[in-house]
Length: 172
Image 1 (tube, helix red, strand yellow):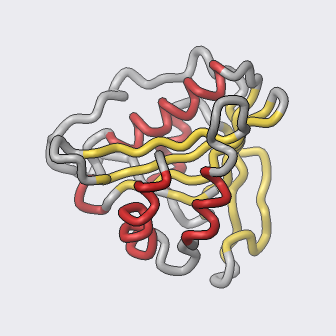
Image 2: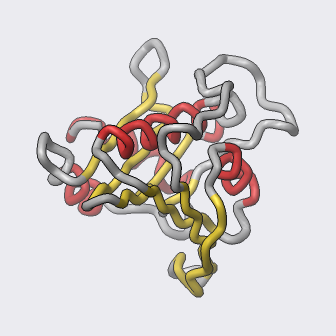
């Protein structure tokens, strides 16, 4: 993700996160640390014509990393895009030498929780009232083996979603 991607990401943000969408300032702040030697990594997923349909961000400090956000355009959910974005974040955390990856997911976002579980994330706690202003709790999940936790179906495909697809989005 680069600065010119912020505007298209902000078009998706309120649709995906109506109660707790990030502001332009938050993305500018995150991208300020996404440089060589910085502690952030952000990526976007695009269609063949360059339209942004997904994005994800990671913070890596010391030997731990944290998923900051994953968002997938609702018209593209269920096609493996969330899986590919999460796989990218895990690979980046491993490349940076992190031993563990943490994330927060809305306690009521079962689709995202299933995606994370497929990668080997396990629940480690609850953050009460984490998502504001809705005052929704967050489930904290942790992945300890970054090198061995990639589901086989991590490629983006253009199939239609079905009830067994488990990707969704979540701000961490």
